[in-house]
Image (cartoon, rainbow, N blue to C red; front, side):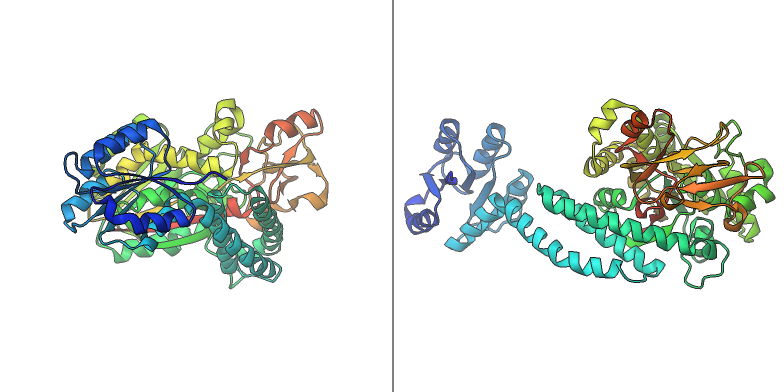
Length: 518
């Protein structure tokens, strides 16, 4: 095994012989120099794994040497060692992207810890994370096998996402496969949980029922509007999963503290047409169709299915007797986003500002259709990273940053999530059957009853009928529908794409985040 190569530059290097011998006994090779110029020459001549650099050397100082080192080898870990505790020197060193900062006199164990922290950090963290998840695995498995409440399922999902993100950093296929299997098992049990209780939830018969799309504003947003004297910005990012939110959180926490991180349940079907319309209307789909037929676009009708969200929101606000001034803004492309970011100050006079930001939903559809996006988001981890990359360079980030300078309340949420599908399920329907891969609605749907959650009487769960004999069928966990004609082609084409509309933790358990200015 190759020894770790350490370069140590210090004008008092002769006095550090005991430290050097200590490191050599630990199995490291240590090359020494007493000035910055020679340190640069040695870096040009051979490869080193880490550099110990004295800040106060005659001639070229440590800070000047550091600048040259970073130009020469930008990824080389540099540990700055200094006698000075002056804040400006620390800031200069940290600003130059050092890996560690030690103040003299240093003891040998400090040096050893710094080497391990910088060179073995990934390996040590990998071992510790794997060990910790193995301990949690049994505990999660036992809990998943019990009768859980809707609240307890939120906790299970949060913990699974936590381990998913922790194990993202580990290139251990076997432990990731174990987590994947446990998540599949959890989704199987979660699907049964939803199937058994969904009708009682939407009919208001279950005291333990969760907050869902149609009750979200009444339970969460409207009370905030009544108690807050500040403008409230309600930002809905379409199709944002909880794990994607956790990635965005790292950027958002530059500007805000997370006041409250909650999860609520999307209704079925977990798609924009149903879930988001219900969210803004405060009504379930068949209730919208009945009360506001002019605002409901059926599955078999042409046109955008969500073109009346602003009107539905207005009716909802009026129904709850809220005397407020509000705005509704939908962002479908970058130009609209930039224009909104530039004019954000004009919204400060409103009590409520709703911003619906469509990108992730478009990304998931592009992931299905475009080869380049398939390659960029080939798995869950890559999909999360792509979402973060978009957010960091989007006008939405500019909007979030601008709002952090104002005295406002900010909510970040979504209407549904998506799941990466693997397993095709056969279904047959007529020409009027919808095209979604996670749910079907139509006449005479033919499928294996064991493979789907079927709703023969749509009215029992407040779903509209497309005709008198229509019924609904929903996929569970990571299944997706495929027709028997060309079954193998479509099964392969849609496998590993991100879809929504059915029952899974990823689609139904979605974030509702309250932010507070720092």
